[in-house]
Length: 565
Image 1 (cartoon, rainbow, N blue to C red):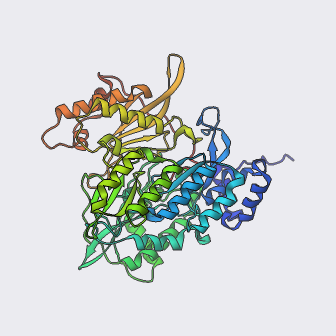
Image 2 (image 1 turned 30 degrees about the vertical axis):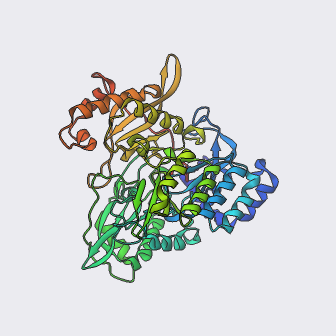
Image 3 (image 1 turned 180 degrees about the horizontal axis):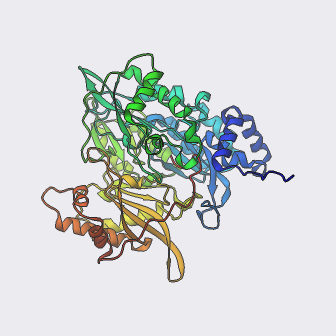
């Protein structure tokens, strides 16, 4: 009698089995043991899975997928850590501690992420217990910054101080965080679950691309929230769908919990790691807004009201950069444009000192990878701006500088195909020199692979990392996606069929933008220009001549849990 063949676990089956076997938040003793015994003691289950629940994952070897297999590169002996800052809120003392951690353990690296977190690199396993203890004493935690959990809850960085906000939503974001972050009831979700909560009329936390989004609305004289679900990017971008519901502030936590429960219960989403986000209930399972609302209502012990009135923001800058008067008389916020979010520990310490010297010691990070100092008296604002300039930080950057966003890239990510942050900085410098007359806000998003961590699908110009052969050598290249937008003209960027080596990207963008400047109608925005031109026309503008389009490459591999924010 022949033996039955051994059936190999799929990646999804393995991930689900590991989650059933262990809640990493209840296994801190194992992390401590690894620290005592050294890097070689770290098991594959922890290195590739469980560490993510502590905001930690393995750092790539600097070559990205090159030299790896199955769409993943090789790992180094070092780790990365993400520290979530709910609503971007951080005090000067906390920022100072983050700066010390960066300098003591992370080779002075520190990045602001697209979910308002702070990210470290070069961490050794031996240092993890001390880092975790230091963060805990400061009221900070990396829990939930990665893994199949509720991620850092994002919100308006000017919550409570913005002159035009309908309501201060920071307490709501904080209450949702307190319930769901690090809560063992929600340690085992099908994949990541992203929440955005804002009372800001600018929708500056990009609610359109979150699994759950609460945006300001009014109904019968009351101020509350509209509710959207199912947003997300990666390889299959999908904008969040509005439900016919009006959520009062005191109902928001129950709504968030109910939707997290609905997500947790969807066993069908656990069958494939590539189709495990909430958006696939719309894309693959046939769910409608009406079904979502009915499922949610069944979880609640109160009746949701039908949708209120809201104003979807037009084509506006959402970064809150520059000097802006606060609702508190005589005080200003000072928003720093941090190119690609790249800072270092020494700068974090300097910012903490400036926030205390010139303001109240309150700061906020943004999803635009920037940082804002609050409560700066008007008579001190100019001096603060000068001090920031002296340490290399810009308050008033060019449209290219302000609009640039970049993911981690091959510098640290094992999935990346191209280097991103240094490349984006170079491109910005080139464009500032080539097009000093450019007068429009511009979102220029660079992502190092097709997984979309750089959010290129909602950029005016989205650059997706590829490799091409040039002079017999494989070199970094980028594929162009144009016309992505959020707000009243929300839409996914169009792949226009243009790919070019990275060294030729600035001249391609220059050709495109010169066509816009020379051919636009009165008052026509860049988004409007893209909308009224075909892919073929935009391709020719990028290339400088009529050329045949090229296809986007197929995805290089699955997205390991926790990599993309």
